[in-house]
Length: 132
Image 1 (cartoon, helix red, strand yellow):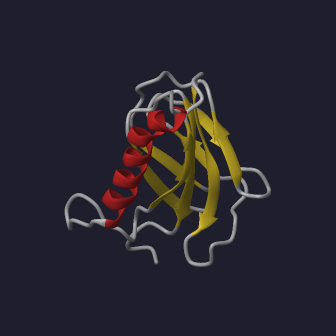
Image 2: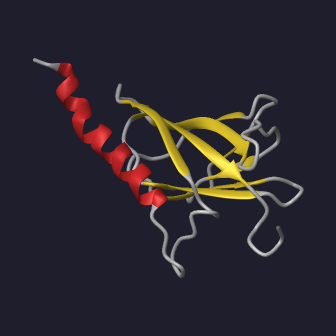
């Protein structure tokens, strides 16, 4: 059996997420406020893991001390290299991954229902609209 066939739906979901994040609607979504870049998704079973890096949108520089929160309350804090890992979520969780710094930078990434495996994302943070 070809194991790569199991990754086709997951790859399609990642492509769909990346495409949706680029669209913009004046009342629903502002691409300057939200950006998602799916780096990879490894379907290896087990519990879902959302990992990645938090960066300053203007420079691409990694940000330490970013608090990342999922809709179920799962949280993590980015390290000195901007990397983070969220674990312990239930499969099927969906909604927004929210990111904040103590000095007011924010970022969000939409998540489709999580399956088992590891989802790698980049979260871009910036000042909230109107504070720039």
